[in-house]
Length: 197
Image (cartoon, rainbow, N blue to C red; front, side, top):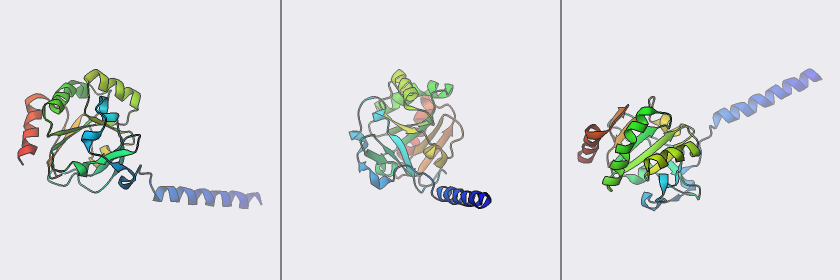
């Protein structure tokens, strides 16, 4: 009797585990948020610190359509990368513990402030809001800071090192990517490339 119970329990556990494996947790689906233009996100620090959601089709390779991803505010408003088509996008992956991320951040903040036609999205990888808020306050990061706590965006873009910066053309294709520290004229050169391609 005890043996049958144990066998039944193991079968039940196996069924539950296979069901969980078959349907991975994805976060919010893009059709579950109120689509909001990025300009209507909060103007304060971090643009309200939206959280990364589902990543959809796309390729992290240069010349290919960039993987689309959604990001959501706590009040249900959100946007996705596809909604930004028509404008070039600088997608910067970083973490608070990363020394080169700290060194390049002032130039990324200045870039955001100097060019209203360019979207600078800062993707924080795998950290909790309090640490991100402190870092953002230190550098005056008033651009949108997306919290990629489950590494959804990082994995879609195959980011292995931080910082990594991906440059997306206005048509939604990837123009360039740079793993490592990037600032000054080199950063500006990449931005000019995606603006003129």
